Amino acid sequence: MAMPDLFDTLAVDGLVAGVDEAGRGPLAGPVYAAAVILDPARPIEGLDDSKKLSAGRREVLAGLIRERALAWAVAHADVEEIERLNILHATMLAMQRACQGLSQAPALIMVDGNRVPPGLPCQARAVVGGDALEPAISAASILAKTARDACCLELHARYPDYAFDRHKGYGTALHLARLSEFGPCPEHRRDFAPVRRLLEGGS
Image (tube, rainbow, N blue to C red; front, side, top):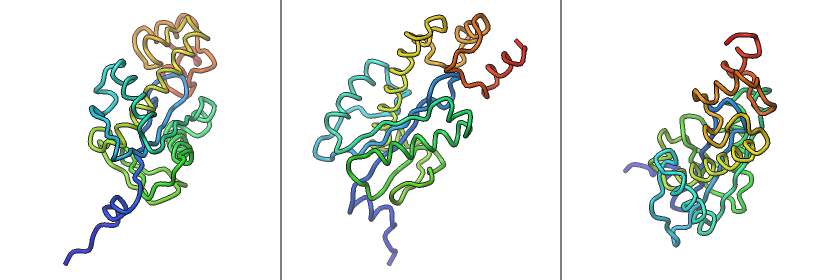
């Protein structure tokens, strides 16, 4: 007789948190992460990978997640931490902070991707493509993305020349043109190639 999988047992016997990040790829701003423990008694229809949802739909779902989840937390690692640690380790740090910010302790943490951050408070596993497969990870991806987008609106208010409200920090043609015209602002990630080339005098 096959022994039950440890993670399946934890999922049945305890709370399960989903974790995801937003903002690894952009040239500027913090990287965000969220952790969510959904309430089975208060299901949320339409949860999915945040990249597959419109901005308006993400905002609606984010409100429902904050209202109905048993626990949720959003955290970030700032640009100084990204430059000091590198983007991978800064992302792991943001995820760790989000998990530590939960008001209830999960028995299992499911992390989108192929890596588990160090220092988590319980058993954890990585789930490749989890933001489209596991509702708790989908919920985390939505909270992380909406928090990151809100941050970009704040960056736009502080640095309107760069049009952060439009490209959200990604290396679009518009962003690269503004970066070339105005040079990096304090929120640009100087270790990222397009920013580094500009600082080194390249195009």
